Amino acid sequence: MNLRGHIEGKKAWRAHMARVKALPQDYQIVYREIQKYFFKVGPVELTEGTGLLAGLVDLFEEGAARGDKVLDVTGKDVAAFCDDLIKDSKTYADLYQESIDRT
View 1: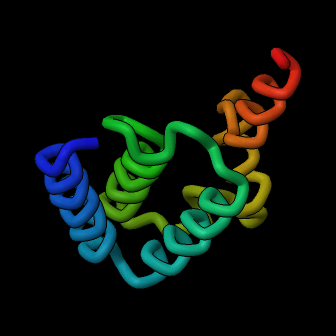
View 2: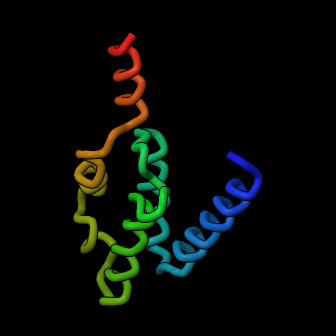
């Protein structure tokens, strides 16, 4: 990645996190826990354009605008909500396994 791409990526990430910080406190807490979970599990399309995290913020902004509690949006089992979001996503573990299978 060139320097310009790196800078643009940082700007996009800061704008994304500014949207998160504008959410109500309970939404921010759940977002950060989901983010940690995704970083551990490793879905490939987390941040690219309309990736999972951007879509999650969109969903949370809509829920907050309606006045819903965050658990009304995700359900009480947040881990199951996360798993459902990434069930069809490739993970870095999948890509690694595919590379091993090719060799």
